[in-house]
Image 1 (cartoon, rainbow, N blue to C red):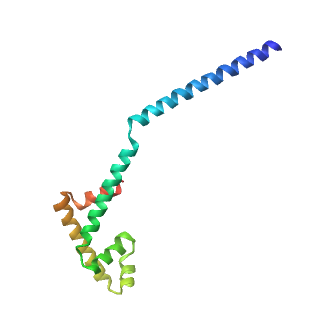
Image 2 (cartoon, helix red, strand yellow; image 1 turned 30 degrees about the horizontal axis):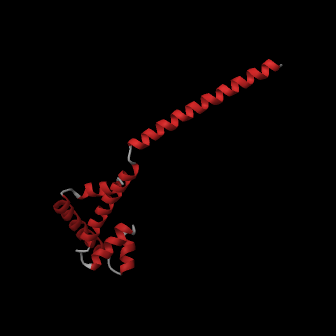
Image 3 (cartoon, helix red, strand yellow; image 1 turned 30 degrees about the vertical axis):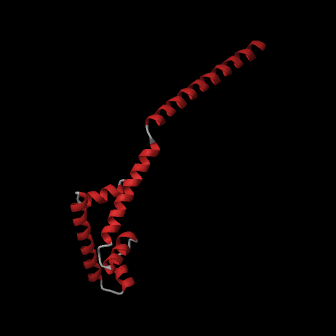
Length: 129
């Protein structure tokens, strides 16, 4: 019976050591991967670029008349329907649509001339962050 206890202890000891070796190897591999990939810098650069695109849109919208700015904010930033925006502002649905067409045209032109990209690419870039 004494030899069985020694045998069981030896097996348990070896399994524990094997587990610790695997854990050490996995931890070393994880550390190497994290060192090779500068996570913080990449996120900071992406956030900075995202914020630059948002600032571009905000600055472009400032060129619009106040009513058009308000319609854009309601429809695109607060996700109101044309009918809801019309009810809030007390104007017709057709007027909301005209304001949105105007704002999208200004944004499209600005993106093409100032950024050199199409409006759809700008929206894709914003949604990829």
